[in-house]
Image (cartoon, rainbow, N blue to C red):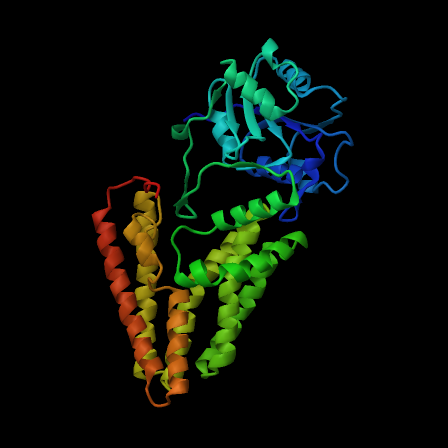
Amino acid sequence: MSAAPPLRVWIDASSPGSEVRVFGLTLLERLLQALRRSGLALAEVSVERPRGAPADLRPELARELPLRWCDPGGVGVAERVGRALDAAAGAPVLCLSADAVLDPRLLPCFALLAGNRAFFSPLAPARAALLRFAGRLPASAAGCKDLPALARSLVEAGAASELAAAEFDTYLVDLRRHVDPYLFPIPDAASRDRVERYLFDSNYKGSTDFLTKWVYPPLVWRMVRPLARWRVHPNWVTWVSIVATFAAIPLFAVGAWVPGLALGYAMSVLDSVDGKLARLTYTYSKLGGILDHGLDIVHPPLWYMAWGLALGDGSWTSAPFVASLWLLAIYALDRGLAGLFRWRTGVSIHGFTPLDERLRTFVSRRNPNLAFITLALLVDWLVPGTGAALVTFYAIVAWQVACFAWHAARLAQYWNTRLLPEPG
């Protein structure tokens, strides 16, 4: 598909609803951040707001977007959109309303579409709309009180068509799941709370471990909302997570299990918090991605080696520590397989089929292994002399080998397959 030409954008921010905050950002700021992150070539972003630019507008928005602030002048939306179309001289204009939460994926999608197109909120009645239009508005559009009414009148008049389901790719590779496009109006506080919850839930991976899927979400939810309101950058959360990660290693190594596990679980929870916070507040960055994903890859074998050292009474030649070295090697090979699978198929090995998604819940990774060793240590504490932790550690090694063998078989099976998973 060819690249889209520079796009002209018109934003109606005349409504007080554009000042509503979702995860600490006003709806107008969310929309501008989505445009900034879209990767689109933008010829102009015209924002109609009675008071001009907000006093607290982020510097990067003013610096990186071709913003033009206009006074709506108290005229109807059809006349204002008509003025924007005249200024575009026949080029398409993307018309947005800043009183709703927009799925940022719709921006590049609409930029590449041909013809006059519209997308409406999936809520009923639809009170939010996205419109791509070129040319002059028909006479039937006169008198429309807002953008949704204007877009609906154009569709009903045959001057524009709605976005078809087949024209939108719902699959999110990084999240390993399908998410339908959304556009949510927020008329009141209850709506804002529902939308925040929807955005939070939709930013979870479709296939992940049982702690992340079922145990952590209530805690992460209670942490992300205030952190977003306080505008805490996710990289700060990641740095705290890094400190907890490496502080746990010597504690594990000397058998100080309680403080070590406390730091381990703190890191595990924060690993969910920083990613959600970054995506929900448009603050993700290359550095954040490197820190987060790099930490996820590097630290598990260090924890495993520390577990093996403690279970081997501090001996570097003990059977548990030697087993931890085997675990490290198989873990590295398994990670390599996962990367190779994604290169060959375009998607994660953990979300290719429903079976792979189900297995990911318990596959040998940090969180499941952390839970397994915790339960075993609890058994040893309740019933001394059972050796549950040592047996469980060997079982973790065996489970890593089994997961590696399974992933190797899946790689061989789908080596020449490059298809996106089906919705479901």
